[in-house]
Length: 285
Image 1 (cartoon, helix red, strand yellow):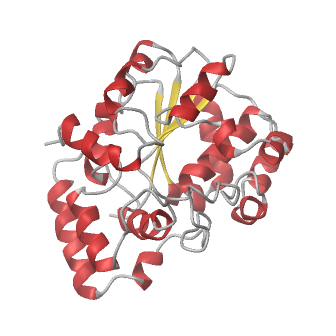
Image 2: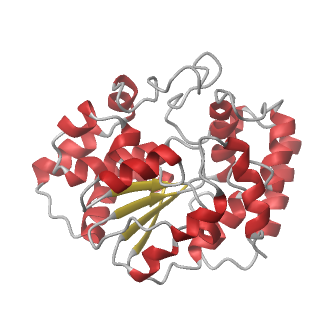
């Protein structure tokens, strides 16, 4: 059973004043026929990797846009006050981002032909990445120890709620032609092939040279060195850069270095219980 919207809303208000009032979310109208919406549970760098990829595909591999426009301006987060304001200023087609679970997402996209790209990753990696990144946000509750954060993650007592409910909620829409599901692991294993699949979904035709430019400019090292993409320009009054970092390693499997054997076994038990009945195989299963 998915978590009730009221419960999710309680987790979202932890990040105010950055976030809008949760009751507003379902009524947001920013979608046009050509819009692209990137969504996933926070907080893994693949959110911003996919944002970089989509921006480069939109510009046919030309890196000028990603080198000169901040990532949150290129693909604003529509659940934030500033992000929604920016999104509404843009003329269609729009590139948008959200971490909202489906239960709270703007339902206007259901009645549009906007394309939705939902990116998933190994929840153990998502948890470890979130643990490190969220420590930098000054308005968020301290993550505590990894043991404490593990319990909060598995019980859904984190920003944007349960990873399990987030994934299952969006997967209920998997048969819709305008929603595309992909995993971080697929991107890592075959970035070029993933680019081609995404281009087909978006109806974008890029030649081999343009695809190669997307692959090159969306690499971890390129993004880490790009101040427009690496989050180093988040204002100090919002984020403590000495405590958290978005682009740390750019690898999958780092959870193996952070979780004890007992914690791994516990995670597997909770994962299997929550994902029972889900008719989809993931690379980390």
